Image (tube, rainbow, N blue to C red; front, side, top):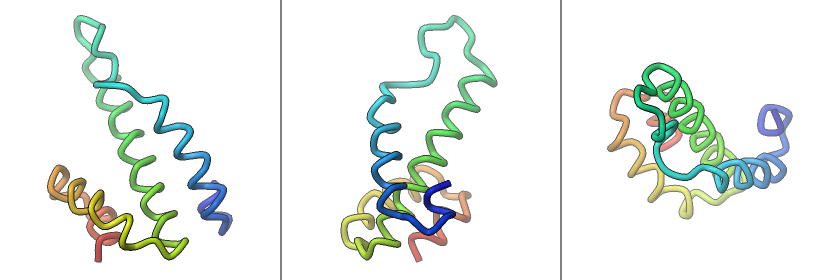
Amino acid sequence: RALADGDPHKAAVLLDDALRLWRGPALADLPDPGAAAARCDARRLDARRARLAADLALGRAEAALPALVELCAEHPLDEPLHALRL
């Protein structure tokens, strides 16, 4: 929400805090994580994409580019991610 409200600095801080809490694959300790794990992974990707968008809004394109290149390679069909890279 901070990013949508035009506060990329606040968004970067909040997203950094949230992404630091993430460790390993989603719900890996469950015998069949299935769709729930996929939803968690999608939310993590959304957070990573938003964090990179915050970097770009703050004028930190050089810092964001390596992560964008890596994520674009991992998710070749993610159009919003590729738009950020462009």
